[in-house]
Image (cartoon, rainbow, N blue to C red; front, side, top):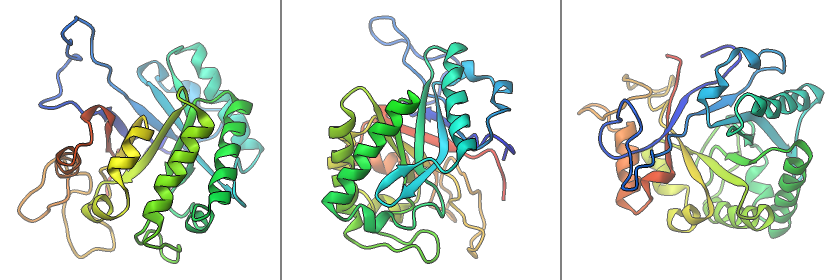
Length: 263
């Protein structure tokens, strides 16, 4: 993993093999590829990255303070401002704020279980985006309804709280702001954590975490960011994407993650 840029390639999924150049549609325009970076570095080094090749940078991470979205310190505030300034180099670039991360969502289940908590959070997301001139929110709740980091509270009702949270966010942010969420790429998450048919109309995209598919604490060995399944390893990018498409999730809203690190 790059020391300063937690950069896993996120590319909008297109059926079939990925072409060397984006394919043209029926009226001759090229299909848009999304290439997204999650940035976890400081404010001084981002100028060295080829941001002209990106469509989004997602700041990682904001957290919860009470029921509100919270930028933790002055360093993070400066980093977000500098990310927004990168639009001078790439006018089409969008900058999103990510909330949570592994170990960063301890109170999510409790906060998002109540209408008051969800409404206050959504209001704060709008306020923070307006303050920084950023373009939306990426939710990285690991995980609704199933075990995430050891000790993090979770409940079966999180699945419904997550839907209600996205409804509240879309109401607060309107149609123009981006809403995405980081989704586990493994079967248990896909089948247990999200009401897909209700959630997909509310979001711009789903950033699939198709990595860490073989965990360091597991007795199973294999490729942790596998493209295809094998007889010995079901979990893979292809398996996750195929399952989601089989239940009606449109390919244009699926973004696959490839981790630039090894285990």
